Every structure is written in structure tokens, then in C-alpha cells.
Image (cartoon, rainbow, N blue to C red; front, top):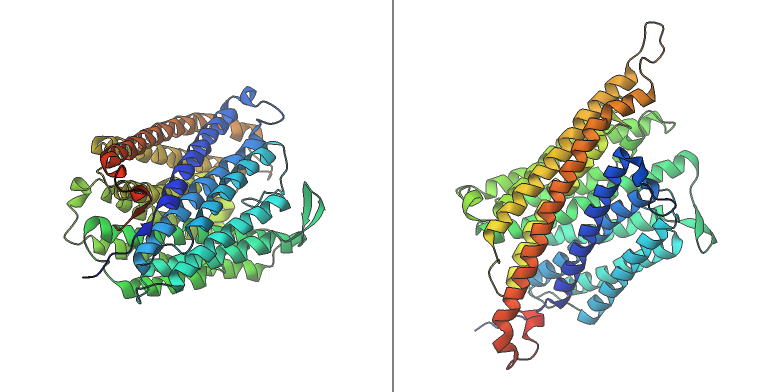
Length: 478
């Protein structure tokens, strides 16, 4: 009789807990800065101004909520797909401590105004090194677990996980190359258009390697687990994977259309961006076809609606993104509020929906219990869906209005509207965005309460066993 390996889940729960904490911080700060755009008097200089809080919002969201959750779920998934316990639980616990120190230090230094002014790479060089060390420690643990695996077949999720580990390392290190002036200030190793090109090669591929490949790894693992249906086509998944990895690396310069970057680089980025639709929708179709004969689970299974909503937003995101990379359309919507609407559809609709489903699943399995309240899960789903749609749709409308006004000219060629007039016209949309953010925050509060109560329920159920079997709560064989 085969003995099931005992998996190490203590680091998984640790990272899930802290990623939720940083996720709440990210949304709270996001709501605050949206209100600061409506009521400028809410800016409290020097530490609590929009300019300093906005990078805290993005860093807490991407690195705290996103990366923290991905580390937790990669630890969970890798052990089960390789049928091998985590290579080093001690290293994982140390990584968790360093992770929290790094995120907290990032928030403090950004509030103090220490900023490299590169989007998604704002941290000054000492903290950038800490982030790189965290990522390397995490990667070593996952790669060593895969290396010692007892399962020969490499399921598609493992390919996405390995691509994430390698891709983020390369991108982050190259874009953060610089010359330190002192402990709190450094300058980029690149200059002029080269610096811009490297920055957006990093920026857009960070979207690929942080906000695309990790949620795809999670989606491919949890959709079959949740529905009981095997993935429709593993071969389609592998083809889409390699196509996505090859094409994404060329697309960064579409952020630099109509700039001094050479035209051929812009055109190349535009062409590869459009080609990206194919592998992206390969994953979408694979997800939909996996649901064949199981669509009733959208009603019956509280996790399925998160996963299907997530992959649907991914599909919409990967149609909208290439559309924005076309020069004529980019000229219309670039530098308008259309772009935050697009980004938040990906972050709140695609990435977070998949993470919510995965965290619900993992928390119930690790605690060996059922969800505390399926009704609260449903409330959570509809609140975050309404909040996300409200945010994105109002920003798309605001962006179209801004673009139309900024490009409107008089018969003599002068601008018809001043910048202030375009700003005043967007105020109603800013108010709707803040309201949508508050709705999303309410959904997040329901999620946190349900997760806490589920963990508490599991702890109570395990209480008698813990008196006779020491350490049972830190490992599982599920």
C-alpha cells in the first residue's frame, strides 16, 4: 500500500495570512488615494500625499498580496504535483520573515519619499537587493522540491511556475541595475531611451511573469481539482505556454508608442502584442472546455464561479491589451483614465478572483474542515465583482471622454478644451470609482471574516487530536 507523503503546509498558511494582510492594506490605500483625487484636502504632506501613497498601493498590491499569495500557492501546488514534501521548511519560514520585513520597509521608505521613479521598481537599491534575495531563496526551495520529485510527469502548472521563477529573476535584476550614490539614492545603469526601453521591457513582462503566468499555474491546478474534470487538453496548455513565453518578451515597447524610441521597435512590439491573443485565448478555451458537462457547477460549487469569472476577465484583458497596443488607438487612450480601468480589470478581476478561489480551497484543506459559510462566499463574490466592474467601466468611460476632449481642436488648430476642463469633466467618474472601491473593500472584509472563521472552525475540530498527536496541524497528506 502506497504511503501518502506528508506535506509541509505551515509556510503556506503563513504566506496566505500575510498576503491577505498586505492585500487589505493595498485596497485601503487605493480607496484613500481615489478619495484624494476628489478632495485634495485629504492629502497630508509630506508622508500621506497622493504621490507617495500611490506607489505604496501598487507595491502592497503586487508584491504583498500578489507575490505573497503566489509563494504560498506555489509551495502548496509544487508539493502535491511532485508528490514530494517541501525541500526546506526552515528556509521557507526564513523567507516569510524576510518577505514581511521587505514589504514593511518598502512602505516606510516610499512614504519617506525614497523612490527610483520607475513604475513597479520604485524601491531604492538596498531594498531591491532584499527583494532579489527573497525571490532567490523562494526559487531555490521550489526548484529543489521539483528536482527531488517522486512524480515523473511535469504537469502544466509546474512549467508556468518555473517560468515565473526564472523570468522574474532576470527582469528584476536587469531593470534594477544602477549606481548607488548613497544608502538612500541610486541612478539607473541605463540612460535616455535605453532606460525607458529597459523599464517597459521590465514593466510589461512583470505583467507577464507576475500577473499572468502565476495565476495561470494556479488556474490550471485548481480548476480540475475543484470541478473533478481533468484539464481539457494538456497539449494545448503546453503549446499555449511556450507561445506565450516567446511572444511576451517582445511586447514591452508598446508602452512607448509615439515616443523617441525607434519606430521599428514600436512596430515589433505592436505586432507581437496582437499575436499574443492566440496563446492567451488558448488558455481561456482550455478552461472553458474543461467545464464541458459541468457548467451547472457555476450554481452548485462556490469556487467555480471565481475561477470562471477570473479566466473570463483574463480573456477580456488579453483582447483589450493588444487593442491598446495599436498606434491609432493608443494615441486616443494613452495618458487617460482608460489605462487604470484596464489594469484593475486584470488585477481585481483576473488575478484576485483566481487567488480567492485558491485560498478558499487551500484553507479548508489545510485546516481539514468545510468553509464556514457558503452564503458569505457568495456575498463576497458579488461584492468584488460589482466593485471591479464599477471601477473599470467608469474609468473606461472617463478615458474615452478625456481622449475626446484632449484631441478636440478649433478650426484654427488650437485646442478646444483646456486640461482643467478635462479634469473637471472626469470628477463624477472619480466619485463612482471611489464608491466602487468601497464596495470592493466590503467584499474583501467578508472574505477575511470567512477565512478567519474557517480557520477557527478547523482549529476547534482539531483540538482533541492535538492533545494526542503533536504537530498534526503543520503538515497534511491531502
